[in-house]
Image (tube, rainbow, N blue to C red; front, side):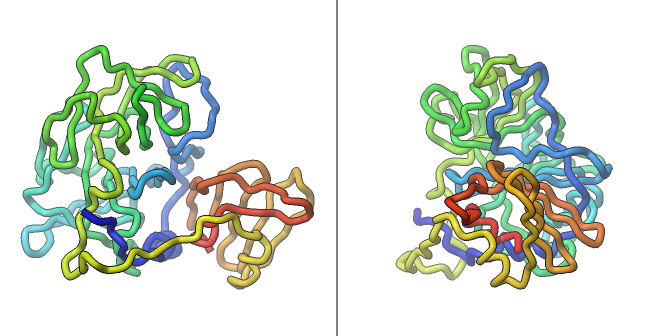
Length: 316
């Protein structure tokens, strides 16, 4: 199966239009590993929050938050709002829902307000321009995701791509595919996976016995959308670093850069983006909108020019 090549601007459009509170990613129990992680880690400032977990080696994005509304939709779908005005996912009534608490398979009718939920989408999944943005192309859905969560690509030693977490596979663990079918631990190797876990060690990488592993697969596992031609040419994205000031000012933003040790403020009067040299953290605020995310790499200084990862443009 070929790569899903729907519009590369879908995620940018989503981030630009959604209205959410600052999010919080659960602290890893008993671990002090501070190596860069894929998951977004921010301070809790709102009861209803949403997190975006990305990994540059995977063609998937995980949206994690609290169910704030559930409504019956049309044509056998229900609409699930994840963290007030954050994201509305339309799920088929017979959709497979995995329960992170015990690895059981549930139905969309089991989704209730107040549950922690994760929705896995292809990175190019189309979303509406509404508030909240809506989508009906969930790859996988996981409820009761109350524990720590990691989303990454795992190697043959069950270590994630960031070298922050290693899975203990000697004990019996629940491993599922996106359809809720049982897999073996070997299916985790060299695949993207969502891992829900509790206590972990203080080592680097931290070691844990996961409660649930959902293998998302590699990028080829995304099915083509209806009407998409198999011989359609793949869109190539230039992932080279960009000149921070140039790309921001071309998008109508003003860049405030006072010193190398101070945060860099990027603002257009309505939205402010803050990044820091030698960090991949990115904070966006404005008009009660707040999101904390991670860029695909660090902002860094090249001579007299501040450089940024290519995906900074998706937040402008």
